[in-house]
Length: 265
Image (cartoon, rainbow, N blue to C red; front, side, top):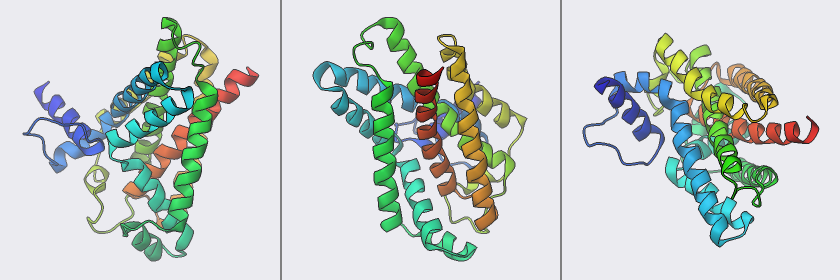
């Protein structure tokens, strides 16, 4: 149990800005195992986002509450995944060879493709969340639990989609220049089972309200499949930025899928 707690806090320290015990570091062995808790980190980030939104609705309009909620999520992760998304937009938008794409993604500066991509991503995410969340219902306990599970599911499933690429594809860079390298070296069945369990459990519980919500998994993992194939085609695998981009895109696809399910089913 003590070792598992160490692995969990390693994941928490690596994927968020939440303070951890002083004895936690970036030990490569623990980082390899930390992938099993990546979707669990989504529980924490999703819970924080919902909590800030819930409190925000008491003082502000739904629009302001959602924006503050999105800011809270970004501050919690240190824009870890958003940065990856921007780098992918720049790299694949401006590069035409594997070497050039990887070189652009390694550059810390943001380019036009990354800036435009982030603006469009945030607009789409905000609009999707705004259509999903009914402020008049959120004061009801049952509805609050439903929306909490919705936020948590979006973050856990999108992280499951991202980390699953580690299980099925090879790391693209030949050096250790990316901070995702330690989690890309090896994994066991424990990492796979742990990621699946923590990734799917919130949605399974949410499906007790409406079983059709499970259908949201289909577009999310179709998106994951095509993103992984696209990365494989151009850079022969993935990088940490690719995982961050996958998380962000799949999160938005999840919201849009829920909108479609509630609208047509």
